[in-house]
Image 1 (spheres, rainbow over the protein chains, first blue to last red):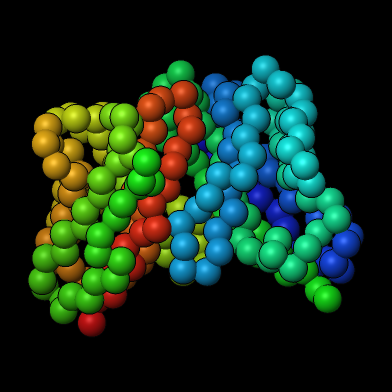
Image 2: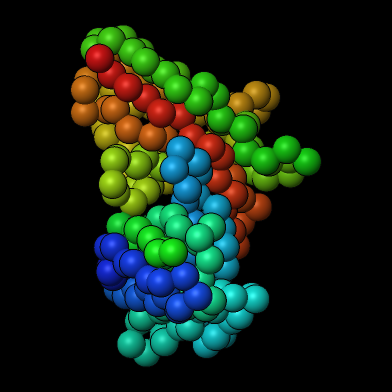
Length: 113
Length: 112
């Protein structure tokens, strides 16, 4: 089955700097890669996603890249702000299959003042 | 258009009791998924259901756990004879397919 690895587990960046979180996946059948943000006591919130027919996607300060050959994908947050502090999860899914999402273990992002 | 509604938000059960967790999907969503999250860990898939059908239950323990999504009403995740190790946050998500999940706020189960 699919296995998603995520690094780092904790990341501290100065406010205004960029943050990068990296993930790898194992199943070449995976074709949908969402990123979720989870704040304390809340459910995961989808912040951006990318499908396997696209190499890069950007939404304001957030961008994702996907390298299908190497089976890795990354989240980039630029100009970080205090409200970006949260736990971020990468995930992979085969949307042509049963759609279940396999999550990485998460990255706790701290934005330092 | 309300999001995915889960209740209760918090549930405390004594060892050996039953826990029933409810999930109402977003309007128009016919796919429901349940995930479990242990402290400081990612979400682990448990079960995928469509109306009146279990599509994939490969992530659900074979004993004590069951799930249903009846023709009318919410999806139910039932845990019988709860043990301390069942303490976790249980999240429901719904979808129209093609991968995009919308998650509820979760039910935090504490077994005492």
